[in-house]
Amino acid sequence: MGNPNVGKSAIFSRLTGVHVITSNYPGTTIEYTKGYIKLRDEKAEIIDVPGVYSLSALSKAEEIALRMFEDGDVIINIVDSTNLERNLNLTLQLLKKKKPIVVVLNFWDETKHRGVNIDVKELENFLGVPVVPTCGITGEGIKELVDRLDEAKEGSIFYETDEDRWSIIGRIVGKVQRLTHRHHTFLDRLGEFSVKPLTGIPISIIVIYLTFKIIRFIGETLIGYIFEPLFDKLWLPVVSKISEILLPYKFLHEILIGTLIDGKIDFGLSFGILTTGLFVPVAMVLPYVFAFYLVLSFLEDSGYLPRLAVLFDRVMHLVGLHGVSIIPMLLGLGCNVPGALATRIMENRRERFISAILLAISVPCMAQIAMIVGLVGRYGSSALFYVFGILFLIWLVLGIILNKILKGEAPEIFVEIPPYRIPYFVSLFKKVWMRVKWFLNEAVPFVLLGVFIINILYTFRIIDFVGKFTEPIVTKLFGLPSEAVSALMIGFLRKDVAVGMLAPLNLNLKQLIIASVILAIYFPCAATFAVLIKELGIKDMLEATFIMIITAFFVGGVLNLLL
Amino acid sequence: MIVDITQLQPGEKGMVVDIQGGWGLIRKLDALGIRRGVKIMKISSQFLRGPVIIQVGGTQVAIGFGMAKRIIVDKI
Image (cartoon, chains in turn yellow, green):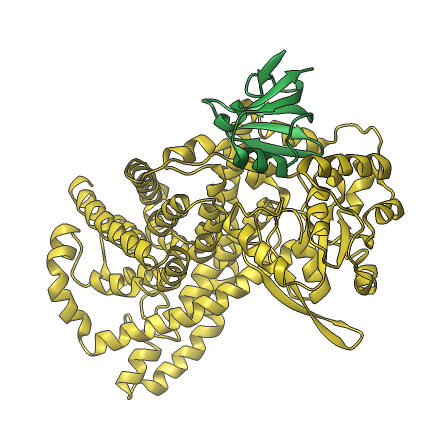
């Protein structure tokens, strides 16, 4: 346990070998993770707990942490050694609860160049529990921590009131910590520049612009130079052979290979499991997912996101949220599922409701974005600008409306701004790899399932049947051909496949824009929907679903009239 | 001079003399080390009554404008 952003998850990973996502902002861990460690042939369970500043539960994550505390036999209290005074506040509260404790002084490597000197032995004497300096990122000190785990004991410090506690902390810090003067580093200066409005706003615009540029560059390069050639040169001969063999078995051919375009397989249009089903997630979406998480992880580890939250605080207040909610929105751009989970860092139900709805309706995930870029991007950047501009407008207008309708108002931002840190590349790549692996595990099976279902639906003419029913809405209201209903049906399962299904329909630009926007807003994919039910509860989710459907009808109709 | 922290200029320092709020606010600020008798330094403010950032101890904290109005300091 420990304060937010002191590196608990990094220490946890080191102790257990279980990889968990770590970042440089408070609130990365929103749920507890379990792992195991061997101590003298005995297996001990270690739990990574969300960070708390004190033992009074203010947010949902803090409540979880408190419950975990009650269950623990030994508490490993992680302390940011560059910030001893504030961290000891929690340490003393933990010591008062009379549980065996080991204190870990993390970020030990940073104390040197920050001019902080801590007398570890002296601190041990004061607290009456073992104190171990570590560096979670490099693993320094972890062995000593493991060796000393069974020295954990109840502390020898007590206090009565809050004031008491602070005066004891003051005395301890005065005795064990020596600060030497140091000059401002480049990162400190950058830290100040990036939160002062005159310099911070231009910096944020540059950062966001570069983010998009880099993602698109990496994504396009990977697709153009690696994945498309791989599919064309290596995979195409294989599936062509399979196609020849399967030709007599019409049904199987339809499902595995799909429709031949001019007698040949077209990875984008054929829509068989082995053709489009593999091509979409691997060659069209994966490169962008990788690029997105690479850049996002860099921003996370550097500590820039909380600063972005401060700069965008006023904008977020328009939609009834405060700056920190920009973090779930950004995560949602990768995949809505982690975004929906991250809404937990917000304090109250109203905020979680608004951010979940905005996320589900108007924040497209990377898989969907990649497909839209592939499909609509052919008409040039201005066409893409239309799609994403419309989605942003929906986000803003819907947010303003929700903020007006729902009772209450946005709580104020109150968040620690961590120092900038230069990302440690080993852990950065581990994090990107974890997220990409997660995407492959979660997405690929569902994409294949989606393609399978489409083919079944077509073969048994169910799409034609549903198409007749929905024709008034799809054709008259949205101005799309009635076959587009198949994309809308599959969109419940996977948005990337759904966008891909628009490709064979020969839509014009207007129809493409409308279809892309409606696919993004009308309903979250199945995985996001399931998470939202868990996070919001059934009642709120029903309301949210109602809002989504209304929004989709309204926006689709308006776009059809205006464009 | 007694002012609230929104009135400080970036780089100016002050000693917290009062927190005008209920128990909840005092607890919340206390958890991050912001309490009576503590020295703070203003780092930045934003346009249009945006959040204020102050340095307290080794920590920088962003505080919404309304909350910042309730933190009263004696300017040093």
